[in-house]
Length: 633
Image: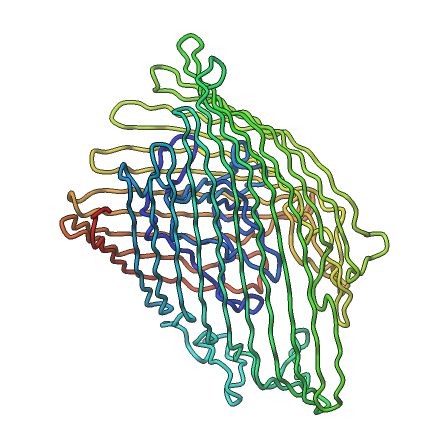
């Protein structure tokens, strides 16, 4: 894994040990992955890429669980706004996954393959993957990767059935899952990766890739069994749930054609062109058997379908030249995509007592479908001075954005807040500096900006209800961020140590589901400003040639101001957190052992005084990797 800033080279973590931490909540009981958090900012403000293609954003009742690390070559994590090269809306940072290529498997051979077996005791996950590559003559290579995994719900070791100070409201007498456990779940995932690389000349490289992931989850939603209580009043509704089964099917595909031309011209060294189609979708369904307050026996089938499909065109050029004593590496190009977003929801209730059936479209949550166009131009110049001791990296990105709503027949507009086209543009600036001096020292700084338009969900959510209304907010302003960071790093013979200080000022930060005082409406609004600042410490030291110690710590603090002139209140960010790892390599046996500890301080301040403030915790994970054989075909 690479942690990139204005100055540093990559620190790599073997891809075979990468994983994402999944979560289970009342709105997402499927043990899925909601996204990364970088420097107190998460969700859709952190951009996720696979081989350069965007990943779908998360909506309220959705997921971003489209990642799979089975065939990963490298992961780059960019901390802070990375708008110039990676995308205008990367406000908090970027997580970019790069998959294996045929060359990575072949390594100069005509035929080669890799295999992997894995087991995770937390959720009894077993995973198997195989990747094969073949060289067909001097200019054609292909690879095929297939993987499968199966898992269950995570086993909690420190949770208590009584819910501790919060109590346990579940109806255990009706067979509900205790508060110290997760609902029973069966999870399976299948992945197919195909790549073909054709190099007709030393200057031309064509790559076709097909990447498909499907993840299916089935959950016995037993936590909700028994008498139902109102989420608004906490009082019994009279309904009793006897059985509830739920399912989630997630799919991600990518079909891409990439051309890399080593031009060798005076004004152009390299040009990379990528055309990609990247559809994302998930379907959620459920079947519930219950008894109504009137005593009727009901079967309720709910279904939700969401898709976000991208057509992308990227052109990235690299030009290298000298001006006097300065060496320039200029990266410039075009980054554009068309996105089609569709959402539908349907609840069908069959009354077994009366024999009637009732269908309710868009029940509980809905927003207008939309088409989005992004078209950006960018330029970055990496300038080396003083024989490479000093680097300056200025950059610009001109970002344009257009969103056209397509409300369907299920959409209920609100007078005066009907869906309308949104367009905006922004010129984003970036400047980095790095200075290397004696004894392996580096000092560096970086200034970056970001710009993110509201999503279709934030602009066009509209659902009238019996107890509350979800109200659209077509007048939302784009979010902006200006970030400054400085750092000091020392490279040693057997490791490194680095310290970073950062400050990010967000304006028009969008708050979800704001309840205007005195109303039963829930909508979105722009906060006047949000500020997040903190310190990061990271390092690595090789105790011996085979025993390595790694560590990192992060302290963050945040505050927000709802309106200009208002007093500031705490902005919820991660407390003091740290990781400590010990890795032992036994190369003669192909064995690697890792012990990793993750620690966090208790949360003391949140945006709202009534928000949950979790206690501090510590988690110890042990990993073992064994390379059975390095023989090649």
